[in-house]
Amino acid sequence: MMEDFITRSLLMILGYAYPAFQCFKTMEKSRAHSDELRFWCQYWIIMAILTILERIADAVISWVPMYGELKLAFIIYLWYPKTKGSGYIYERLLRPFVTDHETDFETRLTQWRDKAWDLAFFYYQNCSELGKQSFFQVLEYMAGQSSKKTQSITKKSKKNPLPPPNETPTFYKPGKTKRHEY
Image (cartoon, rainbow, N blue to C red; front, side, top):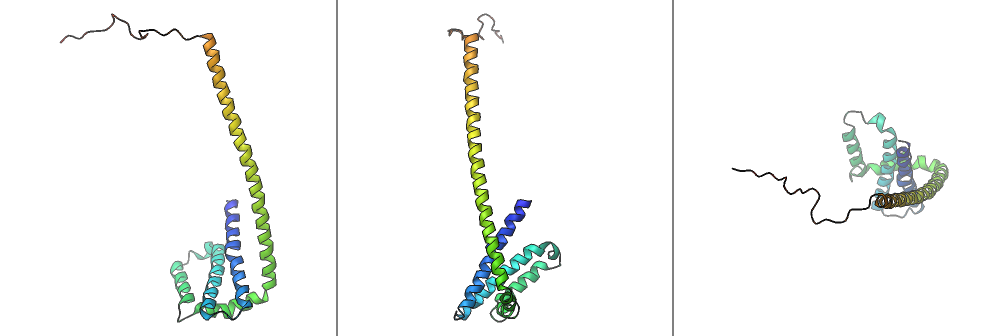
């Protein structure tokens, strides 16, 4: 449960928030982008933010009647050429907010990125060490089982040597067969 929460949180931060913020910075640095490229960058920035907010608030919002349909209508509003909703939301709401808090976002996202890297490296080291130990334990177990079998076979052969081979099997008794007469 906790691992799932950590994984989802890292996915939201590193898969959506950080790339969206980098896209924002890149787009704001060079304002000479074409209008269409700017429009789609705005759309993806807004979608990244919506995805993050949806993951956080999904338990509260998902029970609303026609939630999926409302979300679909809003997404279409964002990219539909006649409404150009992403441009409106970006310019009126998102851009002023992010511009005011840009240094805070930069600091936090950089810290989270560094912590995520440290955590990933820590898990890599521990998993590789655990895997190596488990592999050697399996080898030791298999070697122990193999030596036990050879010891038990040699003990049995010393106590009860195998009888010399017969031409007649021991389960066959000549005179004991019944004949059925019809």
